[in-house]
Image (cartoon, rainbow, N blue to C red):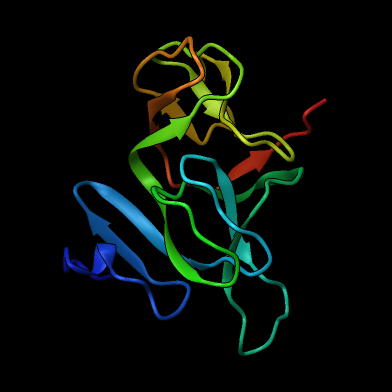
Length: 156
């Protein structure tokens, strides 16, 4: 892991690098076939080519049973086909889309989701974060990302 604080704002040269800064953890990703929007949750995974050129990519969440998905949130938007940093652990500003959020709610991202959804006050295998503050309007709010593998549930 790198601990040089100057690296956190530099463009990474490859995917799979990890850095820690200010009690936050970031992983470098290749945006492959999709641009990433700041504050929106994405699933971090491999591009699936299985070869030596395998890249760590970020993409839209898809239903997958079992705790195998890491959810991350980019602090800044990233264009398609570039390397960039996605935060996977620590306090993060996340975009609130539709539902009211209460401080202390455990949060998950659902299949094809573009926001974190409250699950309950009890942690589940799908919980990727906990709300640090409340939000009742369509604005960013602070969460604490766990940085652990989680299950992605169906939106229905």
